[in-house]
Image 1 (cartoon, one colour):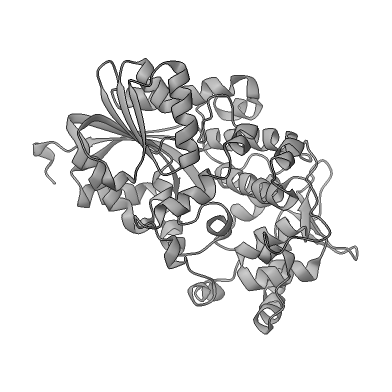
Image 2 (tube, rainbow, N blue to C red):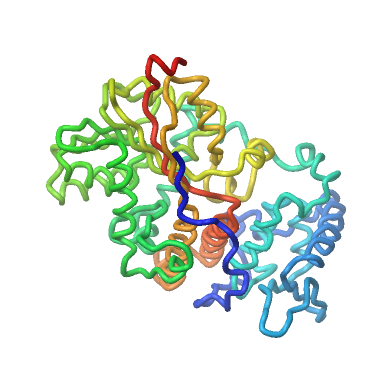
Length: 450
């Protein structure tokens, strides 16, 4: 059974300017911290590829609902019509933009924003235009050459047991204070599930955010059958909210994480709530988990597992699942054809945000569990529109606390990077390029076979 909470269609291409000011990069960028931002690529490859990339970019934007404004007064894109303005992308340094784009493809698009080569009054709206057409921006003959030209994921970022701790640490161990600056009081870093639906979702505010995060968790716990006496395994602790809510139901929880920062704060929150005897949080790879559990829950952790380890992930869950037990996971998903086209790519998100990450498709999850485990998908809830609004609230909160973030040691380049990440992600959910699913599984019966 599949439910959906909305269409995932683009809804905000007409948005006004974002309600904050984007920090500008310093005149001199620290090359020790930001080597790819401090220096514009200048090799022969970058110069030649930059000219090609510039031509492709200009040809693409001429047919898109966007205005690209150049310093000499040139404006590319579809002209605005009365009462209908298009998102505006302002080129500050067109030559640097082209060189970065030519040298790194979409990595260069993000790096050029970080460097201040271009700006946008509404970054999400600009990114939506590209996200909605990501498969057709580059001419098809050139798409076939992408594997020969674009960088591939480094071996050191493959999610082996030796590498995974480092991959996780690079994101989740940045600073608990950083995440506190934009997360709600539940410290939940995944999509909320709001009571609103459809167009009403666009008006959700911070006031109901924590309750919507708890509603998401409660639905997962309900679907996993968590109640008094349940033995619960949580793969990916976050900052402890799910473990807390399971313990409040009378369950005992064993939660594993590879983030020392998250473990420290999650343990503190559990202890302060009085559930230290019911919740155990350990630094451990999911593959090393032993024991037997009535329920296995995992929220937006499969994206960090890696394409070649998804079978291991589900086989581990099957191995520890007690007879009659249930599994409830929340997973960001992508269309299967996009997964197959990009699963070995090395992107801006890999380089700066989630090393080693790969977003699965629903088909991949169903195929792997069907063919390589005794588990079966029983139910799905698609809720991508809820993630778009979750990201909007994070984005607004993060930018409103820009000075606080700067005082924590995160400079203007970092803030532009994080803004690009939030808007890039939000655009994916707004356009339906990305979705997020709550997926319920259990073991197949003897009659269903294997």
